[in-house]
Length: 435
Ligand code: KIV
Ligand code: ZN
Image (tube, rainbow, N blue to C red; front, top):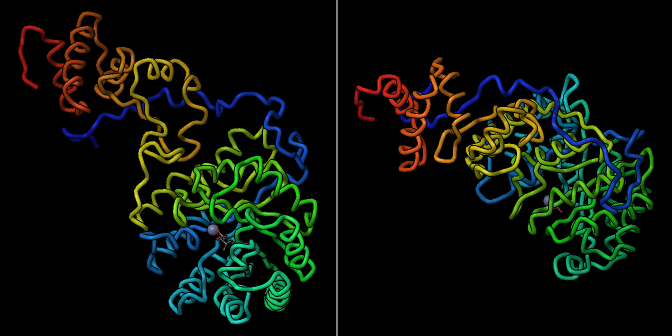
């Protein structure tokens, strides 16, 4: 319902004019990244979406959620169609174990996603994790240890040999409790690549089924990350072992790095709704998924995500954490499908794909043509027709548009009530109505 102070969104029939996603036709890959899969028919072309909003996302300052909020978000993640929900870090508290057990019971059954818990590479963490995820039909233990010299020397105070031995013990133990075990080499992107591959080979040798390559501190560039993933795929990738991306956004490259990793052969992407996560966040699920979808001719892979649930999922997470998205956030920001500039509004009204590369409906949102000082005559008249059911004669349109522009020049938005008055005044030029 529009109220007198409601900014005017214009969502009208133009949004259904096109059913296409507006993506350009396939062109040859110009990225120059290693490409482990044929992008045209991609036999291994299904990418698993591993959502860590409830673990890496929740870990970020100001993002914690109550057990009830976690459960609600988990239900929505299942509706979104993620393959894996990392529900938390069970060893962190008894409350966390309970919350994960609830999620495992609530959404981890009846064909729901795999429920995963994080565990450091020690027996205690792994045992607690197994207990937390136990109620789920499909469960995963995700164990990790750092492999970079800086972490091993200063944080772990462990030699390379000891880290390798710890990996073997941890993965072997986890496999006795769960047949689906993921191993992550924390700070992989700053690790000696040769040692990193040795660590991954050790983990796979002990039964790890997913190998994760975290850019823990958001340091690498897309071409570097692609080269690293290609190297790991060559070392351990097989039909039984999935190589995964996990990128942080410290330099604003988490999504680009994730996509480069997919291009290089990774078949699992770890990400969070709204890009929540430590420091500058993790790769944003909605951006990764919509890039893979919109540019599918380039990437040649699919996901199991129901994209129409994206806007709702974003709203759920915003609601649960209280962390608002900037209006210009890709895919889920308030302006992601909004147009105010006259040239853009005119283009969208004539043919949506002039200024939109995907339809708002595809992500469960709606296109907004916002009336403001940049709006053009065409969009103004379309709005008057759609919202007020009035088609103005040319002279009335000119008067109404001129008055509208002068109000819009003074204010950021023109309310529905003001617009109503402008149109009435334009139709009865001899009557002066104050607005
Ligand atoms: O960023 C990171 O390294 C992590 C691991 C625990 C997977 O979140
Ligand atoms: Zn992380």
